[in-house]
Length: 210
Figure 1 (cartoon, rainbow, N blue to C red):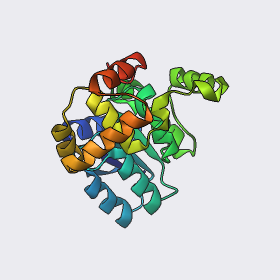
Figure 2: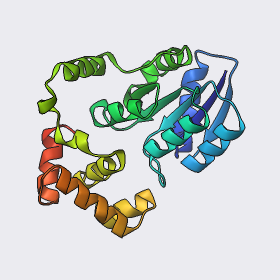
Figure 3: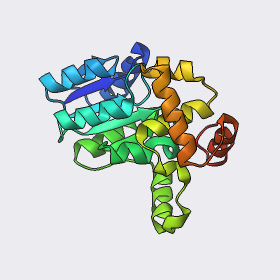
Figure 4: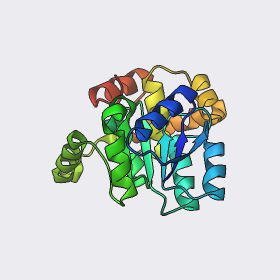
């Protein structure tokens, strides 16, 4: 089986390899430390599964995911993130991922998740599956305001609510300060808020940041 691991930390890539090797002995691994390297490897080789970190320097992990699915629509992508499932899982699955899990649960759940997505299934934790089922039963009028945001707007909102400045966000996402300011303005307009403090309170109330 061919497994591509995309994470900007070498120690994380090695750790993920070891977890999977404990289950599968005959594996070929590829490694990428950013989105550009990942796309090069995906375009030039076939992989049975891509394990993708959603938070890397440079391009948004969501954008990288979408590009991987354009290049290789049938390649399953398992997103691994430091962010809790209720922050990004729904957006990741809508963007084409076959599964979403947190790095905290990787030692216990990674092998099961890989098995499931390689077999053609989708993977989320049992707890998050219950949340999804509950959301489907809710009236459309109850849908949270942040679900109106685009993926990039949502990403910027999370970073603002986490206390990062526009300049810091611009550097992290390799975008201009003006562009980030535009996204911030759109976020505030769409969720009908006046500033960062109100936005942060909203994000905390909805469990989007700690």
